Length: 164
Length: 110
Image 1 (cartoon, rainbow over the protein chains, first blue to last red):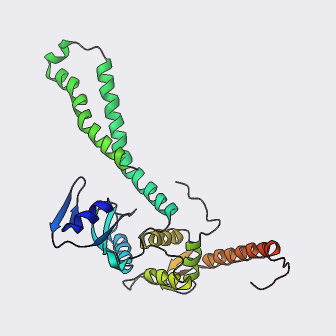
Image 2 (cartoon, rainbow over the protein chains, first blue to last red):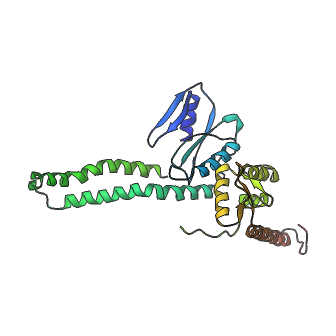
Image 3 (spheres, chains in turn green, brown):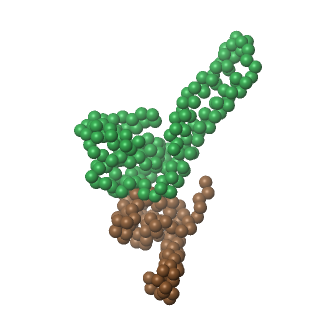
């Protein structure tokens, strides 16, 4: 992800905001920036702002400019020639932070995916007659889980692809 | 999630605690460690933040005052004991190593 942001920046696109599936760039002069995407355990709207501020000011003091954040993902950049110390210098600690942050946060989505998958399966394994389609409840009952499964499938795949 | 107790400190942890024998704010710690080790050991801001909050939770360090913009930390009594014990342990390692590597058995100064 950092490499991508650095390429964009060199082509004159500066990262401005990041959403769940999107990123917004601003057109500027090409800049030679280094990016660092860090995982902040207590990030996101549900946690005290004070902690995030402490964390960010510490990062800024060490030479990384805060760009934007999405939930626990924190985006920083720095001019390449300043060469600041990376935000994470200990792989074991970094790994722990990522595990402690990502699993609880993404577990809900993964769980939901399997529940819906299970419901969909149980729908299909039951006796399946055209009579079911004669009442509106029957129609809903027949199609709602398979239909729900479609977006859940994509969200699930997206989440799982993200994890490593 | 069960947290394992601190056994041996990692090098950055050791230097972090060493820096906090005197009151220090976050970035001060980074500079102090950098200076003490002449750039050999570096602690990144994200790593430092997570270490500080962990040490604080385990009552190894505490915050001095909260009114200034920057949080200042220092070792607690427990923190001093842990650092001292680690210092002794490292000394022991050096003494044991000396016996074999230098053939000196009774060096009292390291």
